[in-house]
Amino acid sequence: MSNESNCQPLRILHLEDSCVDHELACLALKRASLNFLIERVETLSDFEAALGRRPDIVLADYQLPGFTALEAWQRLVQAGLASQIPVVLLSGAIGEAAAVQAIQQGIADYLLKDSMGKLAHTISRALEVTQARREREQAALDLAASERRLAELAEHLQSSIEQERAAIAREIHDDIGGALTAVKFDLAWLSRHSPDEASQAHLRAASDMLQHALGASQRIMLNLRPPILDQGLVPALQWLADSFSRRTSIPARLQARMDRSNASREVQLVAYRTAQEALTNITKYADCSRVEMDISEDSAALTLEIADNGRGIDPAELAKPRSFGLKGLKERARMAGGWLDISSQPGRGTAITLTVPLGPSTHSAPPPEEENP
Image 1: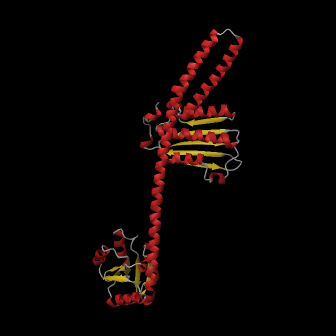
Image 2 (image 1 turned 135 degrees about the vertical axis):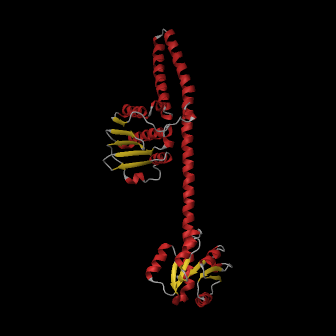
Image 3 (image 1 turned 90 degrees about the horizontal axis):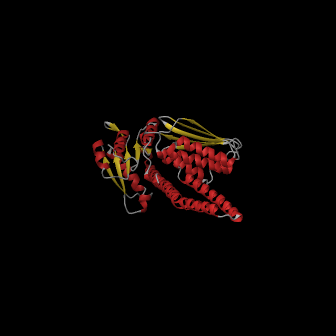
């Protein structure tokens, strides 16, 4: 018993109307060489007052004049001490049904008075169980706090990533895009003023490379910050589907059961990034011949599904610690107040479904400043 291992005596509150039974309990504890202090009370009012002195454990007779130990237990619960102070029934005639009811309500243990020799052991066991429960509850609280901090960190990082993407897109547009456009004009001037055929061939090659660089910069900017979202979620998803089909030669069909989205810019961005990441994963892993995208929205929720007919995902792959892409999508959905479901069977394709409930806080709002470079 933990209390025996230190100098502090075990503080016992004994709810008992019989002086004789109280003395017998004291004698049993002394015989067990238990270091204890014990206080006896007989009424509910005295019991409540004694709880203020924070005993380590309560011993309670089941039937007392005018009330039962279960009523005393309810007072303990109301005082918010049920998880801190274990209660052991010490009764002379408690039936099995009453004992089971008491245990179900939260009483730690019970002992018949004619087994008083086991009292010290019963107290020790009740204290150990209560301590273990306290530690579990504290561990659960610590875990919840840790998960909350991690979620806040993930949300902050995601927000920072989007801001950084917007900043990089602005720099590409303003600096690299401007410089490439200026070079394009210079090449055009040289082409007009150079009669040499060899020079013209080099100028045409340089113009082709420049056009490729301009196209690449445009593509990178669109991936970093999708300005097409300003035209609406459905056009943005259609652009993603068309771009995917052009790059991969895999047909991607979008079915939109809505004209425009009334969701907030944040939710629309989550839907767009989910589709973007899903199509990237399909390109890398799916080995499919068809992709179907379905977007719908009503007053309750926005739902987006991206499905392919590829090789599917093995459950073991989903459980891999480093499957960050799908985990990132789930975290995005969670931060938006929604959830992400992944349905897949090897050889029968994969379907990723994003669902985000739409409440007052998730309907259209002006986009954040960083999304408007």
